Length: 252
Length: 234
Image 1: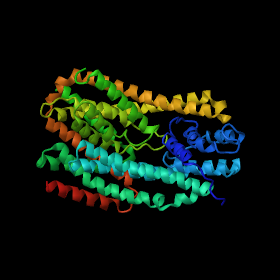
Image 2 (image 1 turned 30 degrees about the vertical axis):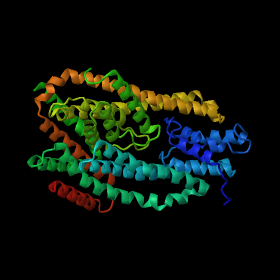
Image 3 (image 1 turned 180 degrees about the vertical axis):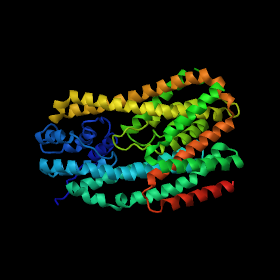
Image 4 (image 1 turned 90 degrees about the horizontal axis):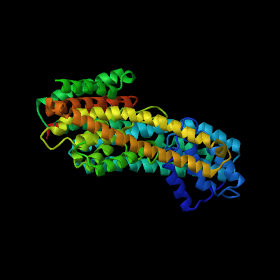
């Protein structure tokens, strides 16, 4: 592999900040394609001919097309695509890479973040609340913990993508992406398990029989929803029950 | 509309716009999650504890609706701002916040569903904007790309702000209209109902999220045992 071209810190920063807005023009045709081109643009200015040159315009046109991935792991794609363009890879190879990496980046990000890190941080916030944390404390725990992981993933993605270029598939085998979701899921299960009785206790503010009856009822509801899985959404059940309760309160 | 001054309404609208933008467009730092949005709304309305309580309960429901790809999902940010505002404005009488919780939660859940629909409209609008610049984008025009991208961001900010203001105004008016009927149910009963619903849904959601994990059940049971012991020790 050719040595990685160097980019000034300002260019890195520019690309990195734009990555946070990668879904800014999300639509059902290009998905996040426009966002990918927008994020990569500061680095593409360093192509031969500079901003407005033929290579720059051709690369911009390529990257504005359809692309879809998990928004955080899009950093991996942007890093790899910028490296490929600066290395002068053929447009065909770049296009094949773009097509090939959409699915894996989407699936890996969904597992690690939406089904892993986010539920874990939510459970952590519930636990903090259950243990008596103040409003500021709960916010600090949730926003702080979540964004340590969030920002670290974007930084890692951009760096790994740029380092590996089109051979970035190896980065998808990283222990963080391979085993990470499993560990996070276990931590989520344990944290949520500990948090739920404590949340119920603080919410009811009345220890005694009422708490144990409520805990048993909540456990039954959990089991029922888990058994019904994809056939029933808990939040729809919540709407239905609350609606009945609300009507009962008003007409009573 | 009692309880919310025009200044507070303006602040709530800006908060809703920020958390709505955060949800998908920028920066996805999860400021849009109920626990954050509702608590901040409570702060603006002078009762962060009520906002936090509502946010925690809504967070339990939000656990089962993760924003996977282009799927349709409830949008929690603006809805949580409205729900937190309702709970925080319940008044200082004993049990008033608890009596308001079922209404605030119901409003938050329905508002989240409606706000999620506006995200679909936004994506269609973004497509319309992009299609007007299709030739320029195909030619690699960076100015056109920036225009498309920034238009999307501004539209999302405006959408979320408008949706939040609408929810807050409509729900507060509704609360004022039906408010006298709410004390017919005791605060303890209301708290019991929403507590069971929220923690029950959260338990089911955690199962759905991590069901593929080996020995998941034991981790959950172990955590539950720790939680129950902690309750007994209090």
